[in-house]
Length: 308
Image (cartoon, rainbow, N blue to C red; front, side):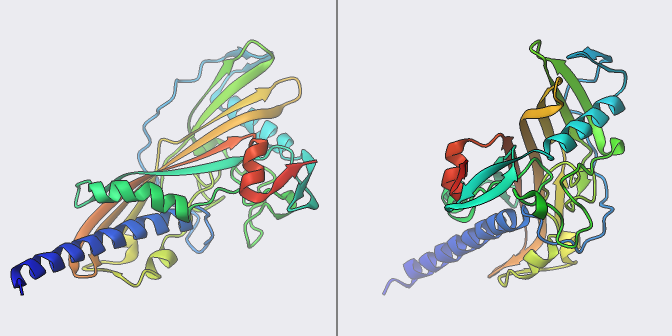
């Protein structure tokens, strides 16, 4: 028997196993946490350093509406968001009649820059699209932040935040601007302030996007994962920063008629023990997008919803 060959094969298999576990951990974190289904962390997440990525605001009249300050822009966005979420429409879901938001939104998720010890791995890069397709199934929501397409259910589980109205505050915003489209509509772009970790409805990111929520419970459930030092909170840094929302508004009705929200998240893992591998680091970037209105094809394929 070729013991040397067998030894090399065992080593390769161990390495492949570690890569697979790390990849699954990354994807499990992404797919589980983006729903924001835990609310146990405190509301005040520490802020990250936010670099403005959009054009600065210029006071002017846009679409017949005068904006003298960024606060005017934010207040108008909130007014239009709240109005748009009062609008409902009839649908059928799996053949049953239902009433949902008029403005429904789709979602998509990508994972980029998965690094182990600061280096990319071709196997992981090749596996991620397939695994993500298997693990992530896009759903249908209202305008974010949102927990449901049914207005009556669009709230945190404990009822502390009702997403039929925007929880966004002026102090949550790092930058915003307005553009006049010349056809009776304007486009507002908003970049919320960054945070380290984010709870749905509880901080600058969670009051604008559908954020991941508490990371601890998910990490603790991964049996293959432990840490060579420190706690979960010490070793998992979830940084929200740079994301934007771009909304088109009909100024005659104050209705949002199109929207694109792009949430950016960077996750760093330190001092991880995975199987036989000890004290390693990993990182990845998440790009989570919500677009409204969702197409007829999307709502049918994702949840068997048909507009009445």
